[in-house]
Length: 128
Image 1: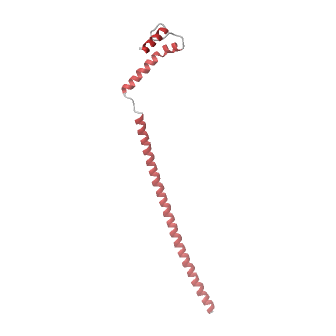
Image 2: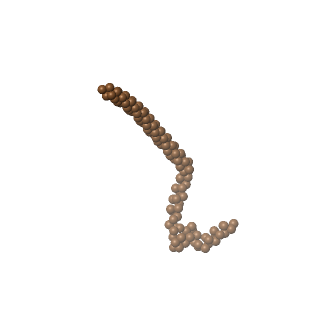
Image 3: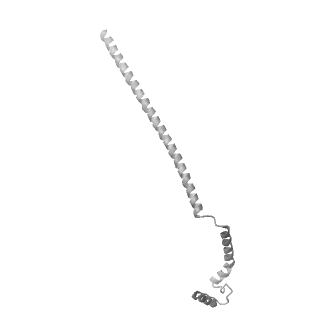
């Protein structure tokens, strides 16, 4: 009977050791799992911060790009727009006359009867 009693005591001590080891391992697992969750939370926070920073940088770049566009292509002054409009109106007015001349169907369009005379006049002016 004593051998059974000692064996039961020994088994009871072994059971306590196993339960103690189990408790230690469970605590280590909880600690490691907590650290892992903290790491993930930290990574998520870092990713969110990086996303906000990148979004802010993108907005800054777009604003700088827009600023450069307006600076390199400023709106023309009203006087320039008016002159440009008058110029193109004049061009459109003379296109039919010049078109016929350039196609060889009409004489020189600016009030000169002879094309040779016009060419001579241009050459004389160029020489002076």
